[in-house]
Image (cartoon, rainbow, N blue to C red):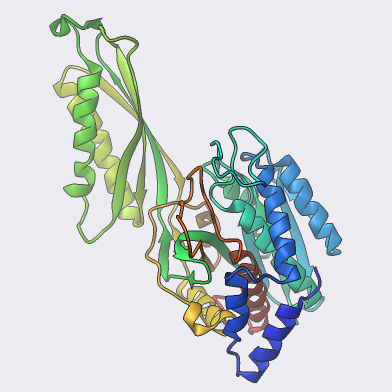
Length: 419
């Protein structure tokens, strides 16, 4: 991907405005008046979108990424099965920055009607990872055409973000070896296309998974007194679990407890022997996270005992909260202003959604940015919706921003930019 006319124009305008980019270039991308570079990114995205693959099964996706990287003269290598990593090295000593994109899709049926809709039944890119891939490939092309003056950029295409801890697998494989800092991003339907946000501190919540099994005693539905109805017990337990937030968590803190699945029973006239509850807990603070788990264990035991049933709790920490290093976040906001224009930068509150990028941000200074992708006209379907409809204008915006952020971070001397 050679440096485009739009990129050259932006670089020229930046030099004339003392670091402030021409916002007309950004507006052009955001309104769909795309350059040939943007068209190329759209084609990459649509090809990936039409062939979505679930976590650790991203075989075709990884092959396509490798093909594009080799076309840039890079030497990709595999990590964690379907993960792909490549280096853009200036040839001069310096820091190493990692740019990360996730590549897996979701197990859901697409209902967009787009000509490039998923060809894989029951699998869809409904979270934007297809756009993440195209953005990072675009950034790679721009960085290869205009390499950083020193140091290197590690491109990380990570598998299995959707609840399968692909980041942990990449970490175990050594993806952070020699890395000084990391930048990640997510296209964001809560922001209009053309807007970007990067917060200090918590950006996304820690994600815990829970499974509760309530065991009673089966009986005929007409003689409930001869058994212990686990469905009734489960109903009381679900209500009690909500007090973990409303009565056990400081109102100035944030937490969510959600039961997303209830399963039990086989017929209208049978009291079953057991009921299974599956859910999630979302927190930003480790003390809050710990307290909720401790109180949940007590509630499961006490509520079930009170009704003559028994209860077991399986509780798993999936990933920690994604925390933006304040220095890295401030750096990223500066790049948004300089590369895209001051009017592009916006605020976005932290979200209780989770991200395994947190595994990286725990170990090196990092920033996770939100790139607005909501269409300006018509309905906006949110992430994980079968009609998810991001504006592809975000592709060129994201590629320009991430490539320039990487180049400028490497220009800074050691001791700045989050080191």
